[in-house]
Length: 84
Image (cartoon, rainbow, N blue to C red):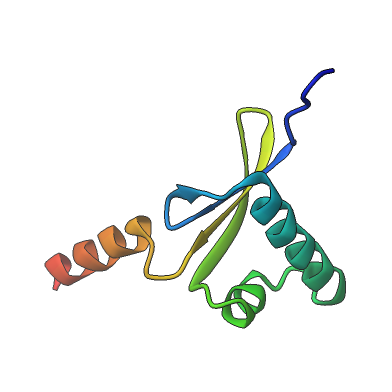
């Protein structure tokens, strides 16, 4: 008996979801994108996230989601405030 690793994964606020939870999130994402092509912000808002980004990491499709402002946006906001 062999165990096959899924080619899909998901992170929410930096925490890896279980395989089943990741598969569920990807299904909802795919269904939404099928009806609202390219509307990442709409999917995020509908599902309680502030940002969702699909990425490719280590041979897997990874859906990266944040329920609060992600670190890269916090850093950008701080840099903008310093320039004023």
